[in-house]
Length: 178
Image 1: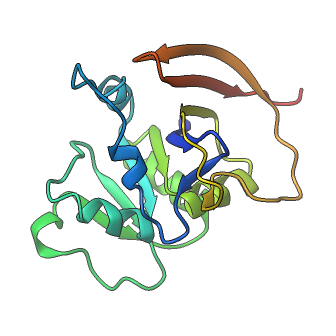
Image 2: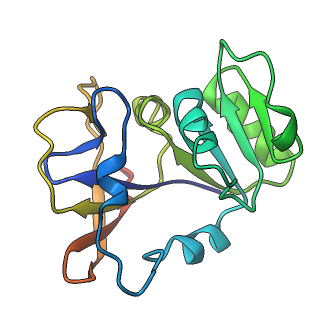
């Protein structure tokens, strides 16, 4: 079982503007109409766990982009909108209990998405792999991918590729102490 982060950041480490806007991601030149490996990544996962803010942002895309089940972490949402109730489910509780419950339901490899959700998983040392695509823009401020925490986590670099002569996608595996 693996908990995997797949995310894009600015060169200065932000995943969104302060107001949550990701318009800068939509401005990336893409002459080949590539998804830069996202569909291949999605083939390897069984389900996604995302926070409410990310879920609400995805709803604004107009078309639901996920073919796998999505579990939305939220203490405030009361229900999933009707048109995607069969594609997403609200979950609450301790992260380890949630992950074990999903494992019991047959979901082994989980895509962890959303700034606060990723940070919560990192603080519990529950991320096994991180795939970060750096976008060549410096935002200067915004929502950071990483925040201060009391835990030091080590990862091993396993791959880097340059996409479209502009994006740099790197893959890291959690290096567990023996």
